Image (tube, rainbow, N blue to C red; front, side, top):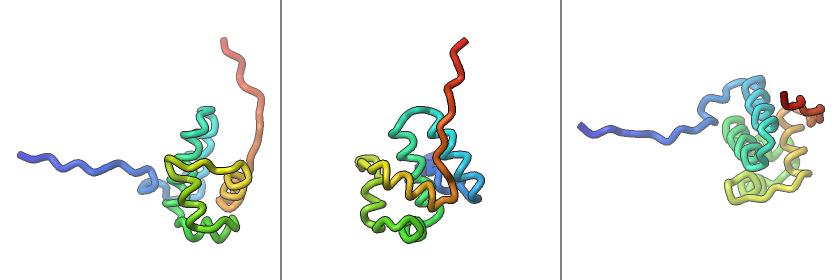
Length: 98
């Protein structure tokens, strides 16, 4: 019996703004820039790349490239996308290791 596998896509499960911002927050807490970039890409896909491009003032094609796995988004692009999602950047002290 053949088994059919589908590629898992986080954007299929991001339904609310709260879901999206919580996902983005966890990615940011990881400290991994590639994970943060991937999360932004997943969220933009879930919300609609055109909508995010319009709200952020970043060209749609540029946004696709920047948020792809091979992209290299500027900090300005990241900040604009987070703002377009209704989020804000915050820096807090790390919890000391025990």
